[in-house]
Length: 393
Ligand code: FDA
Image (tube, rainbow, N blue to C red; front, top):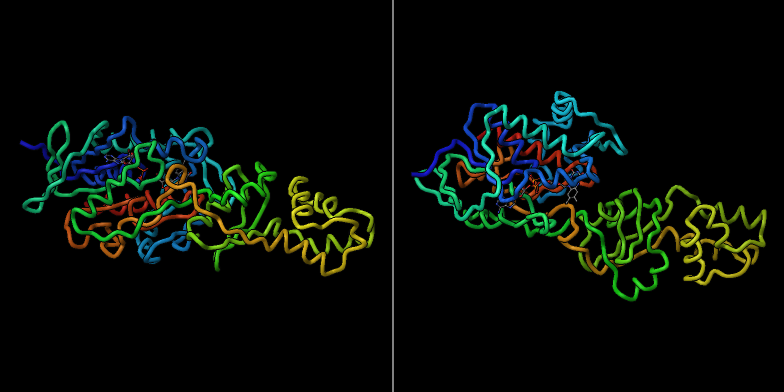
């Protein structure tokens, strides 16, 4: 005889735990299954161990999806403020870092503890190290077969995340279940990921490895102003991670280094007041010295400023602030913070996350084709979509 539960949630990550605790609070019997040995492993490592758990500027425009309207309902019904209220009820100290990003003062483990406490209070059963072998559907119910027996449930919630960081147990399980039940997929791909360069460009930029500068990175009409980091593999830093979610193979990105500095005025003024300086000396007052030297040498801006025409100075500015680069690729799922694409939102109900054609089957969190910007948006989607399903199961 299979055990029975009203709800089975597969995946004890951010979305799965939120869904389970809400369903439990509503009086549902809930079992959460996870193949990992500990719940919320991505929460634990997130935000450098302090978990950037939400963003106070959360709005649908900070999410990528085939249907930009899909996320609206869930985000409106469980907001960043709702999550902050939960964090405060559990007396977890937090602070805003920049750009509305909220972090724990002490440890990301506080968030995991909070979710586990809420699950315990709602009588949710958590089974770790649980391998799901098969899922069947009969007579409007799901039979979830695991190594240690089967569970029958009227509602099945898939919260197993995306493919990012396979080393941490990411599996693509949700996509297989979607396929089994005939739900369409938007091709998954790595997002919020460093970009790589071809070997020739990489060698040319090798002297810049380790340098971080404020920059605006553009791709088409999308742009982000944050730090840019040159690495021994290519380009990274928050500005690059953000733009990576929009970038496609074969596209150029534009780098605007130190976008707030008016380099043309700086150079003209330096030429007027001390024309015997080299370009790199003046640039070095506003840029890391190695980058200033690279700009001057790579573009052949030698000699004194006094000998440079306005046209040449404009070329110097273009070398710093209209820099087009064609990345060769990305570092892939090995380092990607999220997986773009996933379960096509057209197949899901936006209020409940239930599959339109498979009553009782729900998909939440990162496995759905809704992906946030860097900065706490992805956890907010996990909380909001988890809560939406938790209200419906
Ligand atoms: P999540 O991946 O959290 O959970 C899925 C769960 O399912 C896991 O517990 C896994 O073990 C389990 N599972 C998978 N396959 C299974 C199977 N076959 N059977 C059983 N269980 C299975 N976001 C943010 O907003 N702020 C931040 O600070 C960060 N920082 C960050 C750092 C790093 C290094 C990464 C990789 C990611 C982030 N993120 C982030 C993104 C964030 O972690 C991510 O969007 C959420 O964890 C997604 O939550 P989910 O619950 O959907 O999946």
